[in-house]
Image (cartoon, rainbow, N blue to C red):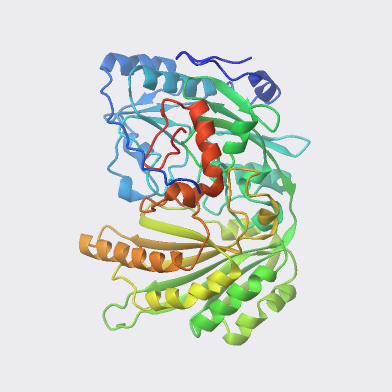
Length: 502
């Protein structure tokens, strides 16, 4: 059964919502440069309209004067904390989401979906209607190992259920991140070299389209929506209210955490060279962190950190890391074999809110080694901020690269590393210091892009990125624009880096 739209567009054929939800019980419900999409100014809905919406949303509507409003709208990136919605629809069901979308269209109110609030560029914030999915947290794992997750599940909630079954999916480390947007943008984690990025495990999904149609998609039904939803990123096509994913069993592994303070260039070069040759069961992140000198410590300090998981013994891991261990002994190291979910407890982080900007690029092994001297040169003169600046390398390759670039919308299928350059600060850092830090970041990023051909990661949304359509989607952008034209021809779901209709 398809619940049709109210705005004159014929629903997609072949959609079987009952087939997706009937047995689950968890929902009672390359091309040309793309110009930035300009957000429309929000219309002012009447108070009567807001009261009418509250009657249609089972979780209620929260307005600025209500208790809990400020807590609900707080984003991960506090740069965008001043963006305050006119109201929040607290959805419990797919039908609630549908009602919220149709109300926003009927009242000409801009809207944005929010589950975890971790959009790096604040795109899950809005001055209109925030469609809050945080009450949609049901998750089950069937006897076939297929996990069914509602649209508001976060990493921490998923982990609490999956660990009881001793299974997992490709997941991130930040417990507060919404699984929906994580999957929609690809989804990286320490499991991805063995099992693919998060969206590679998706077998089916549900989405409320801009006209209110509730769609289901899998490889046979609404295949274009299924393709696009695995890599387009959050907030682009509609509001995704459910996912099915194939889990995998987990066992013991070696968790590792190492820190170096000397001979950083030699250590980093050895790691960037040696690690890509490791087995698929190796997942790692290398961080080069620099803190500006203050007070008596006038010289900046650069340190290297390597963390992750290894499906093997500590001895096998040490063999892989031997070139770096010979370059300099770590000042601290942990290599311990433990159950998978015990290791994840140590590797996870709560993901507290802060002020930051992150810029990314996918790299080959050779490219990473070639840009390392430029990175270290900049890190030797970091901006004068209270918090460190970080150059991070997330290990890619393995199963990710064995999927064709056009098999999903996630196009980044030929790298060894995902590089990320993060600048972070506190409220005490003045505007001049922040401006200088962003200029420092821009200069280093530009130098890297002159040597690196890879694209940027759409889940590390970068509001400063030029030619972002090509960087995020590469040769898949034209097809994504065609899907957008079919599902959202009126460009209801728009933000500065939303994929525009063809």
